[in-house]
Length: 267
Ligand SMILES: Nc1ncnc2c1ncn2[C@@H]1O[C@H](COP(=O)(O)OP(=O)(O)OP(=O)(O)O)[C@@H](O)[C@H]1O
Image 1 (cartoon, rainbow, N blue to C red):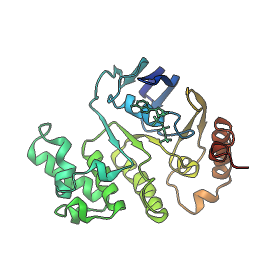
Image 2: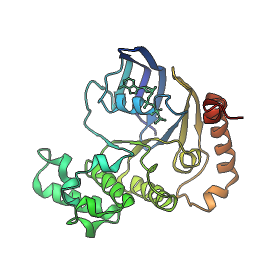
Image 3: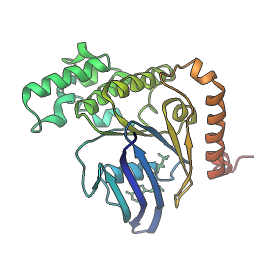
């Protein structure tokens, strides 16, 4: 039986600046069921980050409602964690890895529980031995694994990820994708994942939502007809993968005709 974890109803956001108003989200509707892995794709600047910021309670939308586990979000909700693209800005470089993972739990759970969760989360991302290192001593991919461990330690019902693998090299990215699928299963998490990468969206997800350019609406809700576990070679060769990736790529192209080439005036 599926149960709804997140409900987004007619979500709207207009930035009010000195240069004038800019409507970014223009009535977005979707639900996420518990256990789903939903990716969001759309043209650059369409408001994906704005959407995640409203979902995380960091930005109050100018219209619509967001409900998590039946509660309307009015501030930063419990049960939610977020991983950003820029791991350098999200970790404290001068703190040890263990202290970074533990940080959001301070004042929330007992010391023994913090220790246990930190160890479990770092083990899950393959960094149990790195707890005493400083974050600055780690590679980019390892730092992003620490950021994932920190999110896991919070035991979130919903994990929001904003292009988390966009700043690492291709091999590290594949490794992180597979790691994320493993920990999702181990921790029984629901994930909402923003990415620019069509292949990544299909590889990871149970469903892909595509957005138009701003003022932004949802243009399609594409189910991914692939089972888990997934495999970087075989899944990507699967005809269902190839077909779904073409569909998502077409949707993005339609949303942004000409793409960057048109924006740059290229022929
Ligand atoms: N704090 C803000 N004040 C005013 N305008 C903003 C603010 N944040 C974002 N915007 C504008 O809102 C629009 C959407 O930005 P947002 O970062 O949400 O898009 P995005 O889809 O995540 O972009 P990208 O794909 O390039 O990462 C952009 O035109 C941006 O300039």
